[in-house]
Length: 254
Length: 218
Image 1 (cartoon, one colour):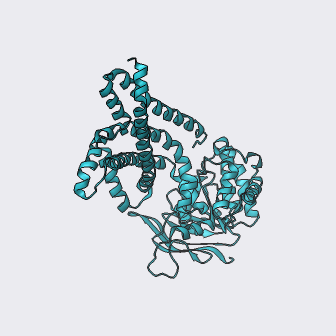
Image 2: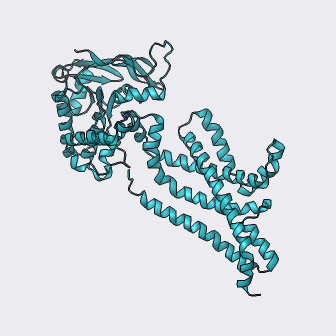
Image 3: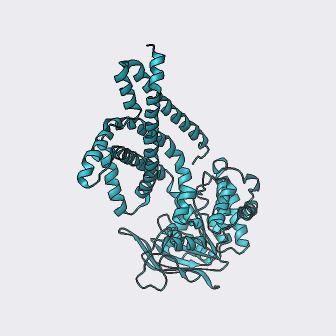
């Protein structure tokens, strides 16, 4: 594996008495596509949210390019980071959500421009130009002026992807981005992800689309009960499950 | 003397009264807007140590009639070292009452915005303040405006109570004119019509604003 962009070591988190992440070790190398599969409640989404600092972790370490995400570096007392530092760290990763979460008061192009203007501090013309380039890339240049409510689910999600990649993040976090879509709209979104992968975009993907996982992933990790149970190249994980739990999961999901 | 003549003689004092009513209302509404937005945002996002005292003040003040609050500030204030003239006391009481309503309206409008909006804004890398200004407030505005205009009209109507502290607003000006002319009926009707005009203008402005922001759907 190349030098990792994100390195997670013994990450643990509990919601009350429930242990949602239990000593998770996982790394994603530059240009790598890693897919996390597993039953719902296994901690996949929580792990992504921890990497993007939308959630805190109780123990262990998550580093993006060597920078600890949730806590200040060089401080043994694990003091949480300030809002401004967190914003900077979040801007280094792009997140795409299951339910899109586009900003409904902004047009498609304005959705993509917001971060470029406010976080990357680009001028209006430059931000619009880059936003349009990415909308074109996801096939929505002709919808730039539409509000999210005027777009289909698949189109909204493609704007969501454009919003994330336009920031030129070090890696993309995709959280079940096709789960809320009608089956006939899944293909157009996966096509965009496939082309990003071909361009060498680093991605950590949570998905239930097994065929897609097999096709685009360099590695697949199976999570259950807050732990990574098995990890490896797609063929070995999906074709030769080493544990009963993974076998049961794969047969359930078909 | 016919009514037109009486009205002509009374007009200057009624006009001054109207000015006072508008001034008291405008100052109270402005104070209340600023304080209410801050309190409401704190209620929605603040740490518990900030939320608790604000919650207590908001609940207490909203549970007291405005008139009681006005008398309380004017008569009990001095005992607590708060020596205010009748005008300042009236404005403080009205502002406080209205601010607590605005705080509750603000909180409600903010929490009606889906929590995913805050997450998406943060994920893009916006700071908390940028999230509020660029993402949360614009969406909350649509839910904020109608009840806020309601509270503004409440404040305009409530401002009539300051006449009880001896401030010559529109209400007291009308009563003084009636005292001079012994014509209660036409002047009370006139007063009611003036209040109605102010508030009708406000509520139709509210409807126009609502229509303007209706494009935001979620």
